[in-house]
Length: 89
Image (cartoon, rainbow, N blue to C red; front, side, top):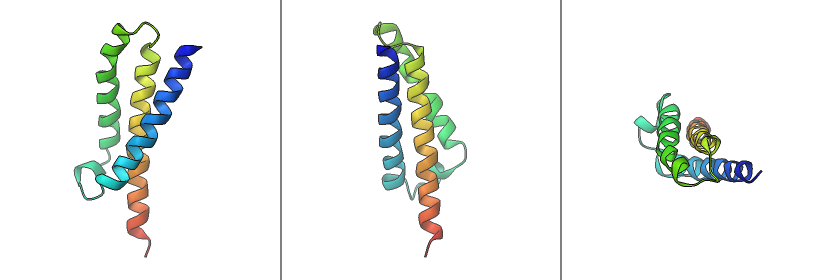
C-alpha cells in the first residue's frame, strides 16, 4: 500500500513540475517541442530512477515506471499548452 502511495505521489509531482517547466522554460527550445521529446524524457527518467529501486526497499519498479510516465506525460501536456498558446490570438 505504501508503495502505491509513493508511486502516485511521485507521478503527480513529476507531472506537475515537468509540465510547468516545459510550458514556462522550454517554450522557445525547438528540440523540446519535437514529438519524441516526451518519450525520451520519460524513458530517461525511468532509467535514472531504477538504481533508487535497489537502494530503497519501500520503492519498487512500479515507482520508477510511474515517475517516468509522469515526466513523459508532463512534457507532452506542456508541449500541448505551448501549441495552444501560440495558435490563439
